[in-house]
Image 1 (spheres, rainbow, N blue to C red):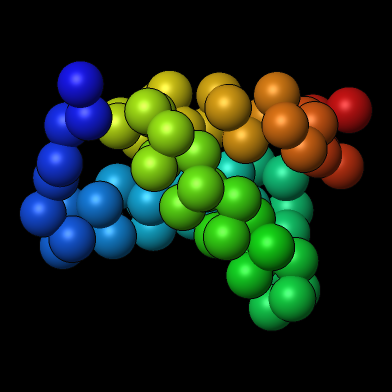
Image 2 (image 1 turned 45 degrees about the vertical axis):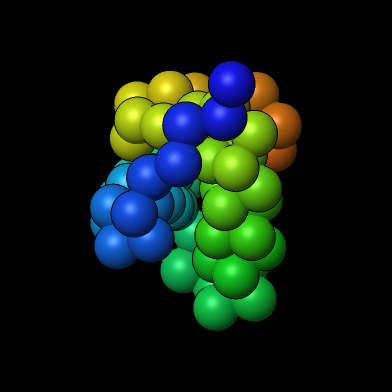
Length: 69
């Protein structure tokens, strides 16, 4: 069963997760942030519906980033 969430809620959760991941990893390049945002949106569509879970999935998919390595 697919849970549908209003677009504004999805956008807010995705934005918070992208901001947190990029802050944690020291990502400030616009193209890198766009890549992270696209991946986060896809992960959200699959099933990750909280900021914490989405950040964890980004770390799993992309890696811990420069600051956490």
